[in-house]
Length: 611
Image (cartoon, rainbow, N blue to C red; front, side):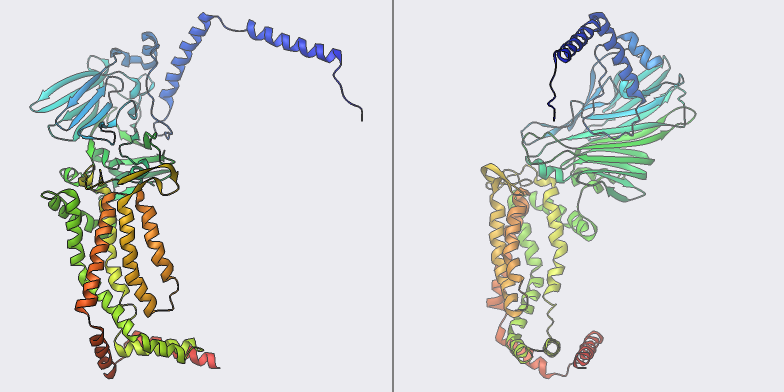
């Protein structure tokens, strides 16, 4: 094959082409004056295009709504039309009571800062739910001039006054002396709830409704961003008392009808928008921003909503309310007419009912006169004592099974080649002795509502937030006793002591219960695996959970072990149980319908096998 080479003519051609490109590049560059004019035109165009974007468009990052500083006054007037009657003045107005501080921006007329005055985050800094443009509330208007504008691009005139002890802030974007769009805020002393009225006068807006949107990127407040993110979620109330929520992970969106309020919950703090009259249709969305545990992660999730506010005669009038405060039952229960307390994740069904109406007020009572850690110990002791009859029933069933073990072993040996016959004889023995192998499972099932309710109580109990006990600095977070120089998948980069103690306690508890079941029911080969797996799962799973929960499990298992030892060595006498079973076997036993049906099915199966 002939080798291809570049000749001198090709080289000269490439050099000429390259030279022509360089010459063209430099000769076509705009002058500095042209560059400045182009930039100004692009800024105006970008602002106009932003006004055309639908508010319902999903947000994928933090909201940035600032108008360019270089936008000239005449360009702003060209953009907003008649609304340029309101002077373009930067600044904020402060609303403040003893629990809440709000700053309302002239640009957009919206809340630009919301700070809890009584709380600090994991870095001992004030808890800000809104700051640095992480929130955006905006209306999309079609004016009489047929302009489409977003209110976050308009400037509002503030007027602050007091009506008694209530602070009233009126923010007006005017098109004339008596024509305006008004955002009106009312803050009462000691309240986290702020009235928010929207109304227009003399604007004659086009269409049947205006679009409204609210977006918020949740700021991190807890030591563990993964743990906080697990309880950061968008929740809403619709169709009467129905409560629903978006997914806690990934991206999710949903459209609902007749929405009364929506809560952007950030674990222990919530930003809530409530409507006096239900919103006809609302589109919700959320996006998870956390990928891994990191001290550098500043945000957890992005939330968004979009809805329409109807117009009457071309004018807008709507009453809403903002809540910026703790996700605390004691506080939220004050707003009973809005049912804001339903935004707290107590759990579903009976589990949530037990958590909300029993454990939360009971722990609140104990912690009112006891240290918070001691209150957990006392509550655990009381719960275990109340559940001790269930523990007794479970242990009594295990004791009966141990007494019958020699006879069961004899049956197994006698019918080792006939599984069906072995099962029939075993069932007959249980029936005569008045023993059910399922009787030990029923007490365990009765404890599940308590177990799950407490599992939801500790991570969401506001009363535990930043309360210390022994080496745990915060009972609502993990108790670090050692920091690792690396991170272990699923375990974390630290060692928590309470989960270790709880794992040891549950191991000995499993030794007492599972070990006995293995003796009485040798046909359960997986029990030994469960005996070792359960403590190991607790050790890893609870390392990043609330230390109050691990403290509960540690104390609970210690108390349960103590109760079982008392039952075994003091209350129950296996010789008496054996005598009682023998007496029971002598009595004629009438089969119930279920037992008779089971016996007939087994006998029929045995006949089919012999054919």
